[in-house]
Amino acid sequence: PHLVAQAKRIEIDRRRQAKALVDRTAQKLRKAGFLRIIEAVESGDAKSLILDRAAKWNADLIVLGSHGLTGLGRLLMGSVSDAVVRHATCSAQVVRVRRATKGVGRTPRRTTGISRRITKLVPSTLTLLL
Image (cartoon, rainbow, N blue to C red; front, side):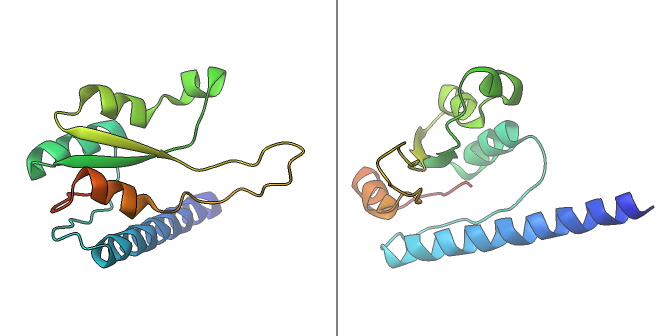
């Protein structure tokens, strides 16, 4: 019984965090001048959901993050971004988070300037799927 309750709390927290991330990203895109932004947080098979919503919304561009998995991790986990890029009927942009380089002292940081790069690709409208 405790495990079920804990799993529900974890799922609720994950959805809250996902919604907050989508809200922050949409706000950045609005500030960058995008005219049309559709926000969604859904549960299910990510590959299928993203491709289905892109078709339904007649998306111009799909923007995806990449965890940069390779080898066995990628084989076991699959690659949502790879599947979407291969099967999307519109353009797809994969954005990577920069990682620290050994011995150099760089710290991991999120990719910045994404809205400027996207604006160059699609200056007037963007349908965003996260």
